[in-house]
Amino acid sequence: MNKRYIDQEHLERVEITIPLKEQYLTIPRLTISDLFDKLGLKVCDIAGYKVAVTDACRNLIYFAHRHLCADELRLVILLTSDKVTITCIITGKCFCRRTVATHPALEWQNPYKDIDLLVVSSLVDHHQVSLRTTQEHCSAVVQLVKFLPKA
Image (tube, rainbow, N blue to C red; front, side, top):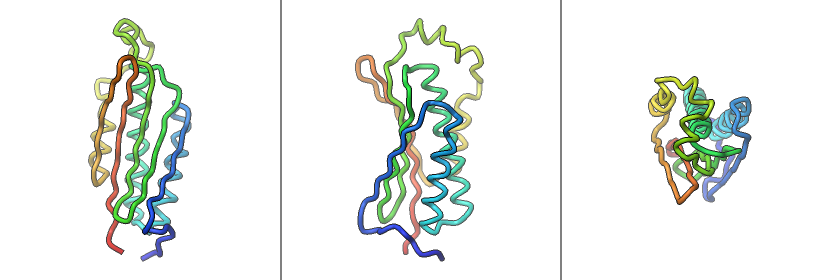
C-alpha cells in the first residue's frame, strides 16, 4: 500500500475554476488522478472517479448552456481523514422560458441527456445532485464522495 502524502489530521481544500467548455475538462481529471494516486487508492478507483468527474462536469456544462448565463465551472475538492468530497458547481442568471426555448443548445439536445449522471452514480461511493434558485440566479451542483479506507 502506498504511503499517503497528505496530512490526514487537517482539512485540505483545493478549488479549481475553468471556463465552461469541455476542452478544459482534462484539468479536473488530472487533478483527481494525481490526488487519488497520492492517497494510495487503487487504479480502478482513480479511473472511475476521473470518468465520474468528467461526466458530472459535462452534465453541468450542458445544463448551463440550456438554462443559465454562466461563464465558469468551479470544482471544490475537500479532503478529510475519511473521505474526499468533489463538488462541481455552476452559477449564473437563469434564462426566462422564452430564452431557454430558443437557446441554440436545445437544437441538438439528446433524449438521453442525463445518462452521464447514471454513469456517475455507478462509479462513485456517494453522489448528490442539487439545484438552488434565488430570484433570478441559479446554482447547479453535483457532489461526488469517495470514502477512504482506514489507514
